[in-house]
Every structure is written in structure tokens, then in C-alpha cells.
Image 1: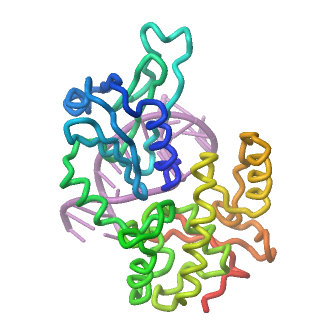
Image 2 (image 1 turned 180 degrees about the vertical axis):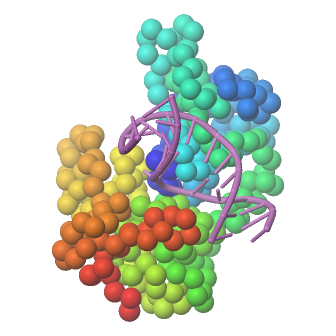
Image 3 (image 1 turned 135 degrees about the vertical axis):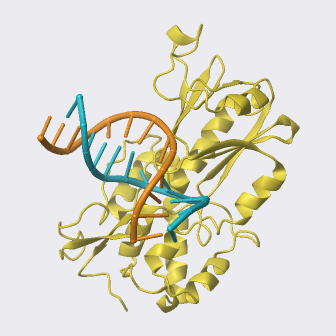
Length: 280
DNA sequence: GTTTAATGGGTAT
DNA sequence: TACCCCTTAAACT
């Protein structure tokens, strides 16, 4: 679920459902009871994201900071008619519920869920690298990422997932974008050409908004073409969960037919094609 | 019924 | 590198 596209999509959904209103904020599970009490009954001004960090600005300078981590989920759903009176029943471990008579947003399993001040927001965002889902400017500059990559002996695979280098990319986008540009994931950062970095960044800028629109990571050109065509027609298609290399170890590469390889690197599953992703 | 894996990341060793 | 946290659904026995 959670790479950067998920958080930007969530920010939009929270804005649409609750922006400018005063929803009920609670912690059915109890573990966020104090924070929920601080926010309950105040205006939810705006939700926004940088990389995988999600922020919800409330009145009085209070901001809710949420990081979904690996397993966190946050669904924003309409309240079905039969549950308008009492609100939908709480199922499972709901750390935080934001709700009114029209919408309910239940947060489960987040790595972080806390009320922070503006200083802390700046500190958190300041540690993040540039985010391909935000406009490039002085504060969101892919060149800063390349400067780090170009003098690093760490692998490109590791650097792309380091949120202080590049914000929002997770394991799927990283594996797939490297495949798309035939780059070996274990190349050291300092061997990555500037032109290759520019291709990676531009490709993420191209791909990730489709993740925000559809809620699904799309990295195959034919899936993207079908989805974009359907979108043009005003349809909201179900996106097939298909990738080039992610979780396809032992299977043939969709491009060259060589066997997709797999290795655990820094505790994460890394996939790449042994045939068409060169080390050079 | 129990174990594992998952699109993350912080902290200790 | 290891270990810890968070939750749930799928994959085991």
C-alpha cells in the first residue's frame, strides 16, 4: 500500500472529505486518545504530503503527522446510509478515526501518529529528499539528490529508497524504474551518469501521478496506455497488478526473456533482470 | 490453529 | 547486521 503516491492520494481524499470542516476525531483503540482529544472539535484546514510523510493541518497551529510505515492503512470512505446515525462500527485496531455524518477515515497500524508543532513539521520535511510528486523548485530540486548519489559508494538500489535522498519511492517503484532504464540495482551511486539520473527522475514524475490518480502503482507501458485511454473516456478502470520484475524472481523478463533475479538487500527484497539490466 | 510476509523506518550493537 | 514497532490477510500445518 504505502509508497509516496498513497500518501498524496490520501491527502487529497482527506481534503475532499473534511477540508474546512470540524470533524469528530477519536482513537477507538485508545493509543492516540490524548492527541485525538487535542484535535477533536477544531477545524481541519488542509492535508498534504511530502514523500511518505502525511500532514493534516488543524486550527491553532496543530498538525497531525502520520507515517504509515510498512503495514499502516488509512481508508477514507463514505458512510453508508444505515450507519449515519451511530457511525460505522469499529473493526480491528483503529488508532485514529476522523469522521462526520458523510465520511469516515479509519487509520490502522501507522508507524507514526502524533500531534506536532510547526517547528517539528519543518524538521521532518527538511530531512526529506526531493519528491517527484511535487513541482521542482529550490526546495524540491532533483539536483540535490544527484549530488548525493554521484559521490556515494552505496548502491543505487539503496540510494533510491533512502528518503533523505529521494522522497516517496519505495520498493516497487525502485525495482521497476531501474528495470525500465536497464540499470543494475547494485551499481554504486557514483557510477550513475547524470543523464541516467535525469531519466529516472523524469520517469518517476511521469509514472507516480498515475499512482495517485488510480491508487495503484503502474510501471508497465501497456498497462499505463490502457489506463490512460480509459481515464480519457471518463472511466475509472481497475488496474491490474502487474510488474516487470517486482516479485517475479525465477520468471522470464518481459523484455528480454532472461530470468528475473532476487536478493535480500538491507532487509528488503530486491528484484532485477539478470539479462537486460547491465552493471555498466 | 499457527506462521509468515508486506509498497517502512528507527535504534541499538 | 540485528532487532524492534505497528496490523492483517494469506499461506502454512
